[in-house]
Length: 130
Length: 387
Ligand SMILES: [Zn+2]
Image (cartoon, rainbow over all chains, first blue to last red; front, side):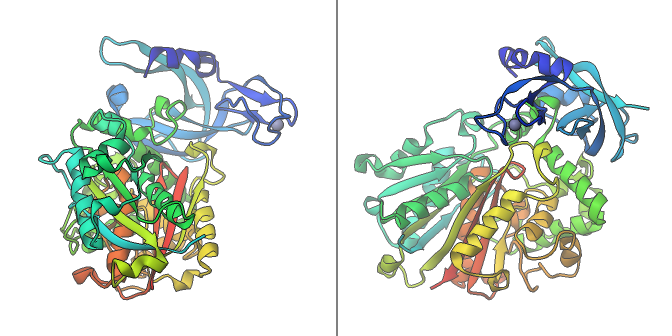
């Protein structure tokens, strides 16, 4: 991961800020700067998501790339936000705890690092909502 | 558009080739294809090479020129182009070559694929392959490539009742076919038990659900169908070559367990060829993971969603079944040098249709290939037939 590249998306990663097309009302996370529906007529503005959703599907990552190796095993899921969009995120829970349909909510956590001494990356993960 | 035929094919043995360099892998495959077609290098008009990530695997870019050069073609100054679509890079190279001939732009065109994956450690390989998905919104969240397919498997098993054993049967079948393939990385049968007790990589996928890390290269030569008999007695016609795309991220798909790009590419291919599913005698599908073969059989239209597990269990897709799937051993047993795979699939179908597949020979006159990039963001489908 390059530092500049990660920081560029910091508001989105920290606060789950996506985008909304004012023309048709569609909301996007991960954020899009171009509405696939309205195309050139779309007017894109920032949109904050509530941060609550449901697990659509999940896995337990046991072999990871170097940046995430220290976290294994970890639960990775596709979460459907209550507003509709889906995203890929880690779920902070034990591997046995996760299930399809599990309600989750966002939390702010360390995501990874570039080696022992390298910079740390923070962002949104999810935890079981109850 | 002109009709196109394959006039020569070549493939290196697949595996961990510590002793062979990136460029020598390609030269080996290219030389085999030229010899097979009975032509010399100077007769080649153009070259397309599929390669996913030589930049990260061997720190080499500018692959098009490099390969033309080491194939001895520098002095002919032919156009040589690298194409990339992750694991579908080889499929793209083949389609570009077919298009170049069909359009009348060139007569003798080489489509090659090459990948040298074992010069770097596993961590780098895992990270490089993760680049086939969405780096910003999948990779940065900790997604690995097996992890994404594992999420497809979880969704699919939950909705359609596919059993863990049925999934394992895909690997057992492909290893059985690979055991009869002299270029396969694993020429050894495995038991259901071996798959089910192998280590977990990303639940529910285990080590033996995953295709291996592989070095290898493949090359095929295409020409106008009307000229094909100048070079070979057994030309194989390209009846269709179709490509489709979809969202880069799995989470943005209409349906987690359906590769809509496969559905679209297959629909186009069957329409171009004017054929039906029942006309296909054999198919090489992109089984980068066992679940991928299950989805492919359905998304290509050979059965309804949710049926492929049962069909696999019943032997429908076995080499002596109604529709042999992956007679080469697939990516699972033959190996998966990512950029080469799409070309190797064409190599296998051509070998089969010529009746040269020996111990793994399938009877038939029409075969199909299915090559996937990422988790389904790019798909290439080709239909080939005996002339
Ligand atoms: Zn819109």
